[in-house]
Image 1 (cartoon, one colour):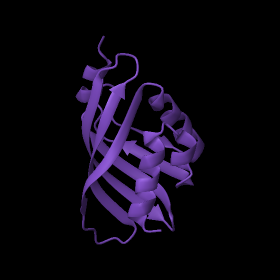
Image 2 (cartoon, helix red, strand yellow; image 1 turned 180 degrees about the horizontal axis):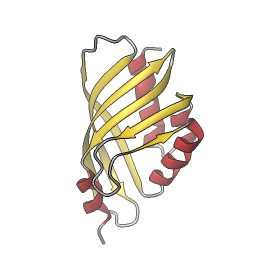
Image 3 (cartoon, helix red, strand yellow; image 1 turned 120 degrees about the vertical axis):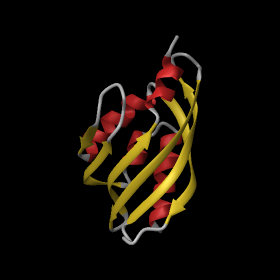
Image 4 (cartoon, one colour; image 1 turned 90 degrees about the vertical axis):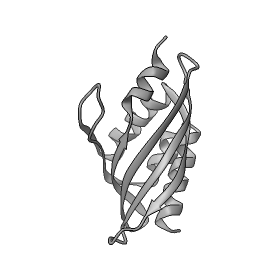
Length: 130
């Protein structure tokens, strides 16, 4: 399976709200970084089990599908740089959640070991307002 196929499979699990299915594609020492969220400031989540809990919490707030729009060339064979969009809803308000992302996805073998993701936190905030 190619790195892009692994990423698409992780995204498919996320669309189902399946945190276990998503993290099945991650290394045990997986790290996800969010450099620019407005509300919390930059933060990262470390370790597959901690990320599973983080995702499970996110899936209780939002349900969305991620679709890859563009994959950019990388000089590193273990790095996928992708632009993608998310479409879904905030579960508490029913409001649409339509966001755009840029993600750097590093792989070790057939597993994702690190992600750095950029998105518009304001879109999430608007979707959650009553």
